[in-house]
Image 1 (tube, rainbow, N blue to C red):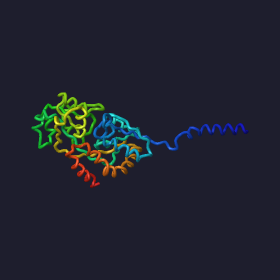
Image 2 (image 1 turned 180 degrees about the horizontal axis):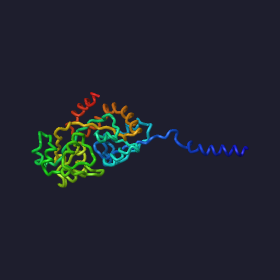
Image 3 (image 1 turned 90 degrees about the vertical axis):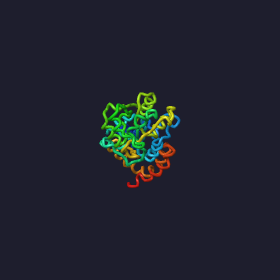
Image 4 (image 1 turned 120 degrees about the vertical axis):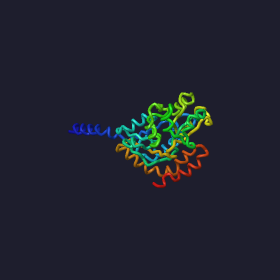
Amino acid sequence: MCAARWLRQLLLLCGLLPALLQPASAKERIFWLVRDLPPFTILEGQQKGQGVIDQLLPLLIGQMPEYEHSIVRVNRARGIQMLQDRNTFTCDPTLLWTPERAEYVRFSMPSLGVLSGGLVLRKENQALVAPYLDGQQVDLHGMLSKTPLKLGIVAERSYGTQIDGILRQLPETSLSRHYGNDATANLLQMQQLGRLRMVLGYWPEVRYLIQQQGGSLADYQFHPVQGVSRYQFLHVGCSDSELGRAAVAHIDQLLPALRRDVLPGLYARWLDPALREDYLEESRRFFEAQ
């Protein structure tokens, strides 16, 4: 009898052992999707880790201890694929809202107002756009639908709903789509070599990349796109699953203080010095209606 009782206790202990070795409560793991996207995320070089989102992520992670966190480098196309998979628990801290993405992404409240994208060209090609300028703003649709010029863009990237709408109206032959981790940098190199006249981009990003490539900002011109708002807004977006929705609910509790007190200053330091004061003043009004 004693031997039988001892055996039963041993078997019971063996059955409980795996459970005893497990953490008291296993945490879900968020995979944060980032790509080399200055001035938001800088993954290489002397200013590695000094981007706006580079500094935001530790603040979010530190206030979300109920999760494990991993940061994963992807290009834009791969990041979109991962967000579309509701079986993964992924979040992207640099997303623009679009109707298409809203079908599979749960978006946070707006986190940061940023300057909208526009046309980047070398000044030696300025005459090509002159007929399509109204002040400094370029009629992008008119220019690309009436000329054989090609515009370099990053594949699967949103440039905001207004510019995306213009791009959808253009013939595919007018667009040169580029994939890869360093798509914007590669487009600028193609432009410098004369293989591409025009690139669509965000001036703070382009400004950083031109300097990294050893170029001179004096050789370039930036034109806002006619009919496009001066600012657009970044969001944190998570896969639209039960886990993703819960994470966004927590993130929405953290963002109001961050977007008021922290993020505008982090972004302003990457702007042309002449723009910084105006941006900081205007940023105070971005979320007043909310």
